[in-house]
Image 1 (tube, one colour):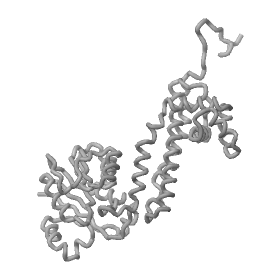
Image 2 (cartoon, one colour; image 1 turned 120 degrees about the vertical axis):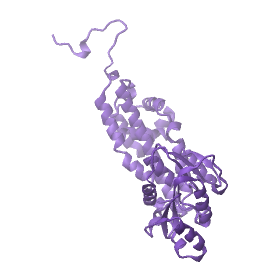
Image 3 (cartoon, one colour; image 1 turned 135 degrees about the vertical axis):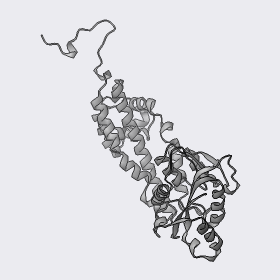
Image 4 (cartoon, one colour; image 1 turned 60 degrees about the horizontal axis):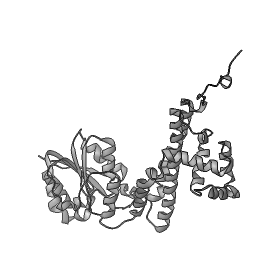
Length: 349
């Protein structure tokens, strides 16, 4: 006689639950679905419209697109949570039927419209949401209480406040600073960040300062490509300081020209406010060790405007390397400007 799993003799205090056996194939499939969402999440959280000339309408549209990205990121985290349950062999009955992104998305969307069984029932009764109802039915959820139970099971592993609080604050603040005119604020485009870091030839464990760090574009590029360095940033604008704090940077000062560190730096890498360009570069120079690097974005007018004559002589005296920048480079900034720029690199004797 051939025995199946379901014909095994039952013993006292013993039962077989085939769903509480790890299933790596199901876990892998759900992880693949989650990974396939990443590109669209990145696009929505950094909408192209956010890089256009700032208007109230464009900010509103960009905010909506960013919010869509945040919501997709939560759905992604729910997929990963269910995958983890299958991987550990600890999958609750209410979540065993989920195998598609649309099913998890339907559950999340309903969770945003109803917290109780009564509120969920109102959603299920609405003709507009019948596609969600069908998706959840295919996942084995047919009643409001089953749906609420499934939401609660996921939120045990993925608490809403752990997902979006910091990211939503960042998204909100970074949208608010689009078009900000205060403090000569023109965020450094990625192409220029890349070139600044290439020219620095950063070494492990260097101490690096970014004065007037703004929203952290240069600092982000440094951290991403050189995680072993000791990076410090300075910023005076309160909203920009808040952004830097949320991003986890080591914020060590407010007004750069009043900043007095207890050590010197291997490099100062900067896009200073052009209204105080010369003072910022002279002061950064003082904070470098012998052999330290100063790399900065400067306006092209430094090289032909009479008001910069003495500064230009100072650059020449220090054998400054000068590199042209695409004249349209800053048009891709999220606070665009047509000001032409160059990059300078100086090595302190």
